[in-house]
Image (cartoon, rainbow, N blue to C red; front, side, top):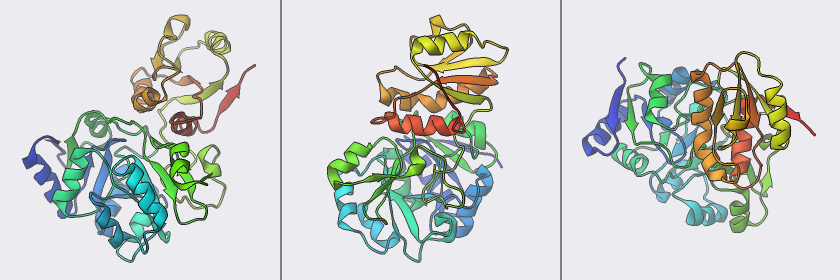
Length: 340
């Protein structure tokens, strides 16, 4: 299969991508979070192609993308007041809501669950593609399963060239980590995956919002993932990543004492001169938004420098930093070394 590279700023290319989706094909779609691998969410056979292209386990549910709030009514059994409040505050944007699904959602999308995750992206190309296709689009991140998510069309082609019909190039993603996922199928609502909309922002609208244990810890054995991103290991480069939870002074001393061949550091901007191993930076220490935008690209660059063991600076898990920490701790398989 030849993967077409289409221009998100070209209306004709939007129409080409929409036609591919109507015919049951797959398109890499830019969003404000990461690039998604889109298919017709109402066609179980088309959705199954997503899992085949990614090598994704079928028990991992997908997010359905819409371009108008009213499209929600076809997909969920009931739109609760909480959904209307959150949508008014944060849609379109990087927030996904989980609600009980209607019969039009195939099991391939919901992984057999009775709920479906839905979001209204703010990226103009995503909105244009959804509208042009006339379909809700199921779209996980457009990468090989378990690898770092793609934030550019080049990342998509690296993983998916020859496996999908097209990628719609809309430039680099602005948020850089996947959407916040909150389930409204429980009382109180519960944060399942942190993202660009913070826990504090959710609570500002809804009041009480719990944080699921799987945000900071591995999903308990035997528990089904209620949202993408809850599995044990995700977002990983080929290297073994170890998070170092310490001051920079302690981190520097540890890394410089362990500079075997293949060792690399994943750290903050400005710290490289004091480290004696190859370095990849993922933003400034005090800028969680920049960390989120740069993290997945940084994880991919670790593969480019052929790193085998990576010592990563530990993000601060607050605000958008919680999303950065959530992704990095999964990339590390929850391997954290705490130094005094």
